[in-house]
Amino acid sequence: MKKELTFEELESQQVELLPSRETLLLDTNFANVVASNSSLALNAASLLANAHSAAVQTILVAQG
Image 1 (cartoon, rainbow, N blue to C red):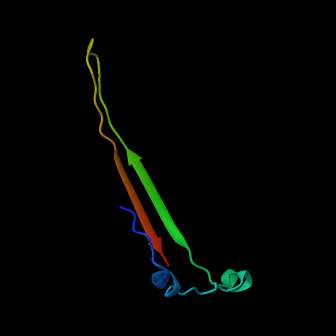
Image 2 (cartoon, rainbow, N blue to C red; image 1 turned 135 degrees about the horizontal axis):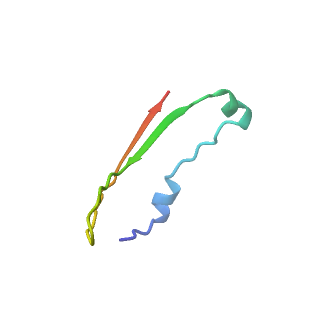
């Protein structure tokens, strides 16, 4: 459901300028992301058989 803004709500909003690119360049913020997808299915020496597999996904994020 979309709510329309009134002029009073819109005028009450405040904005803030971002620092210049030079300032942002010196502020280092790194995130280490490790992702792993694994799945296993086995269908060995059987005729007309089906093999099903469920995949597991893990994502780890460390930010500093």
